[in-house]
Image (cartoon, rainbow, N blue to C red; front, side):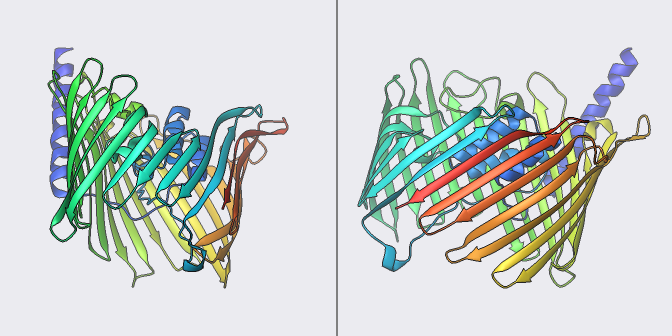
Length: 466
């Protein structure tokens, strides 16, 4: 038994050294791949992610924190993800001193009951912005300052690390010139007794630094963060705790053919009281994902991506690692791809997932037709078994509209165990956009055995612009 423990300890140390070497020599990164709610639902339906993990990413997208949602997607799915918040700019003729929108989003469970909902009424009047609904906030912004009254979130605090939503008042004032740099001072006070004071410095669009002192009912903490062209780093130390909370997001593009990206969290047994982190981050003292992408446009637009996920649980010396290699090649009319994923490197990749994909895009001017087919299976080397392949076929029709808007209808049929008569899933997504109205419907239906086709979940989103 003692010899066995020594061998396990040696194996863990060897794996740790291997990952340390990999960390040193591979600044891994990602190609730009969009994250959508429909994609999250697909991962959930396939069993790739759990309900809790899907809920975390969906909530972050609801709050407008796409960057953090992408970081979770890279950890949970081992797929490169980079997403910028969408913005809709009016043409000069349509610009005015007032405007806004009325938006609603509802998600339904298999019984047709509303699982979650989010409503927002937003009205802009010159320098004032009023939000009512899920977030109730009145904001004022001018050239040198801003003020927020109500439910203050990560977005208003400009925090690199997600924070709890606070009820209170936040003020900030800046001075200086863009050419020499601007300084800003600010503070926050919350109804529960939480307060925050910060100082920041910004130099053009290339560099921003900020330091803040937090006080809750019984704790003090210090936070510092910096953003620069290659990414951002944040440090948050709670007074009395040994280890700080550190977050880093680094990326680069050496040329049009190579790009890299790494995201991670490091912390001790506890994190500062005002943070709001994912459950997977909280239970791992070291949480990171790295991606590296090579692209050869001249050779059938071939793209090769490597992804690494490394987790080190709290109160354990073990290291968990997942590796994935993804390749795509071919013209838009017929493009193929394959992906190999090692579920757990510490187990010598005992379980390996194999995926294959074919996609064809036909361009008809403003309209595009897309056809896809994929298969996925898993091999367990210990007992030499293969899982039944999961098969999927799909088709989509999209229409490009002015202002980077798009109408879309997509339908997919999925056979999770390769048998079309059992456990069949039907997925649909519809998006309609106009100058003043947009609608979106995502739904999944499932047929089990000889039973009827029943809905699994659905989401309806609508927005009226004025």
